[in-house]
Image (cartoon, rainbow, N blue to C red; front, top):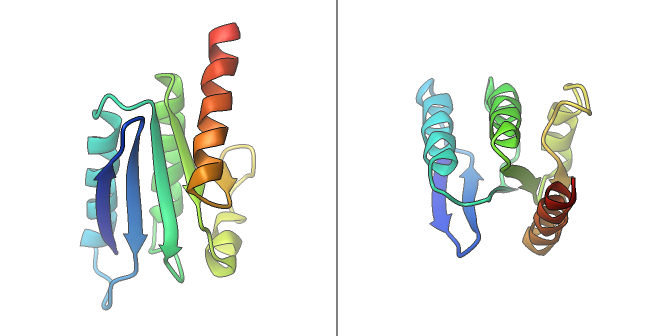
Length: 122
């Protein structure tokens, strides 16, 4: 998997793309990118899956791990542009434990704004 990064004003965008052939470094690239996103100082991490036709091994667990890690620090991790095959792979996770999934980047922004305003009220 290749991971492209884009630093936006309020968020950190990761764009995931399948790479052929897949290697163990796929998980390392995703882990490295998520670690950098976590340290970016941005309040949200958006993961664009529009260029994925499947998740590499351990990617779902890694995304779930970082979702919970970031959530503990008041940050959001949101998946968007998730294809049906990737959605099916994510469905193998307990729905309450996996990262939220939205349709597109605009929905990711709206979701994160709502989450941040809810945290401020609580």
